[in-house]
Image (tube, rainbow, N blue to C red; front, top):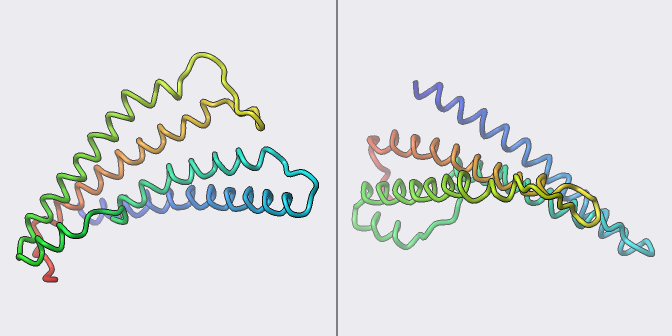
Length: 170
């Protein structure tokens, strides 16, 4: 069962990484076009600024889910170090699970109650340069919190399953 779950997490992470990389490359291309055109052309195209902003937002939406699963979010080290120094490895793990659970509750709240109001607005708003509907931009928020919820649930499962294993000594 654990092998199947780990395989699913690996595939899910690779898919998110692939989409994140696509948006990262698009972001870099937009910024490069902007830099080159500002330095070599009389006027820079205005669409590159908006495209860079939107590709960055989508890159973050896909990257946050990966950061959760790889345990690469920033957290307060002094509490962990103090608990581990006193030999309270289990307390450290419990606190990490509780913090991850709190992040899940906040992400789920934002996903179901706050963000849909932005993404499904009734009146037509478009971006200035690209004339892109703003629903496309706000949809990134739904993706962000959706992937965060899924990734946080998977991370909690990983942490709970690792909770019974013996902890490493620092």
